[in-house]
Amino acid sequence: MNFEDKFTKDFEEKFHKNLQTIRGISPESFEMIKQNLQIVFKFLEDFKNKPDKTPEDFEQLAAITSRLKPLLENFVDTELILGESLNRQSIAYYEHIKKLAKEGDKEAEKIYLDLKTYCEKFDSN
Image 1 (cartoon, helix red, strand yellow):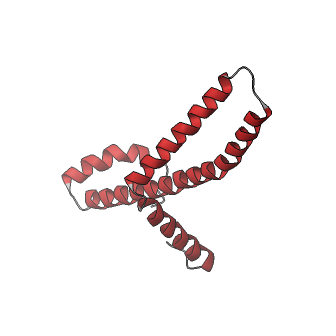
Image 2 (tube, one colour):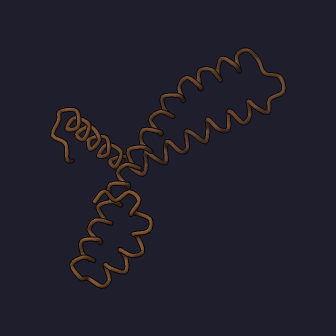
Image 3 (cartoon, helix red, strand yellow):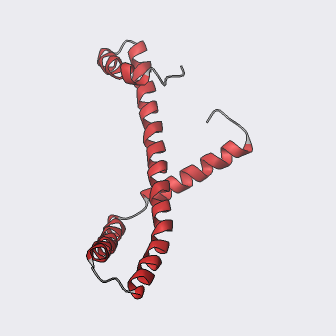
């Protein structure tokens, strides 16, 4: 990072820590999350189609809703972190190809010219 202030350093440290945590989630854990969500969605679909909803049904729905809100926030956070990581990797790849193209690598130049139209709007160099 180009900034040397404490806020930026702390932000970068937290970003990388969160990214490592996300990358450390096992495929089995993702499968378990998927299965649990399918159960919840089945309940919600059944609830929606149930003609005679009881007060207990609404209590259960409220309990599920309150437990899903933090989960949704975690998914949104995960999506943002992974998106930022992909963005940084894309920029690094583009900058590397651009450098190789400027050094005369013909294959890199083809790739650079292909990517340039998409990336030049955001290229600060």
